[in-house]
Length: 230
Picture (cartoon, one colour):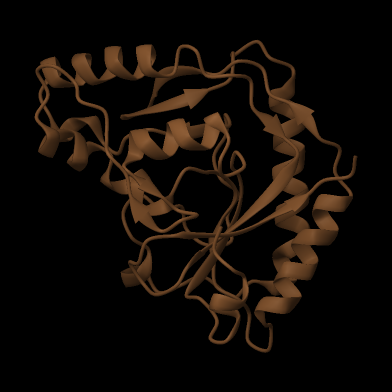
C-alpha cells in the first residue's frame, strides 16, 4: 500500500472514498489482475488471456477502471476545499470508519451495468439499502472538506462529477464502454469474466479505502484502508 505521507506533502488533485478489498487478499488480487494494475503497489499486472480476444482489445476495454484502480466508489472523486489539508481528510475518514459496522458482502457476480461489465450484488440482497446509507453518510460527513465542482474540462469521461453520490447499485467496474469492441468480443469478454470471478470468495466490507488522483488524469493510488469498528 502506498504510504499516506507520499501525497501529504503536496495535496493530490482529487480523492475518493471507496470500498476495496484489502491488498494481498484474493479479492484484491483477482480484481487487480483483471484490470492489469495494482493501485497499492503502483505497478502493472499481467491480464487474463482470453481466446479470440486480442490483448490490445482487453487493455482498451479495461483502461478506464484500470486508471481508477480496483474500487467501488462510495464518494465520487473530489478536490479538497481551500484551507483543508490531507491530514484533515484522513482523520475525517478514519472517524467515519470507526462509526461503521463491518459486514460480509453476499457473493458478487458479473453483469452488464449500462454499457459496462461489473461485479454486482444479487438484486434481491437487503444489503443494497445498507450500502446506500453508508455512501450517503460518507458524502454528508465529508461535504465540508470538498471544494466546489471542478471545471467541465477536468471532468473526464468515466468519472462521476465531483461532490455527487456514486450511482447505485453498488458495483466494482470491470470494463469501460463495451461499444469499443464488436458484439462477438463483448460476448467472449463477458464469458471470461464470469468464469474468472465465479469462485471469488465473499468479500469483507470492514474498512473504508482512501484513493487519490495525484495529478489530473493520473492513475489513482490506494493510500490507506481505515478499519471499521469491530
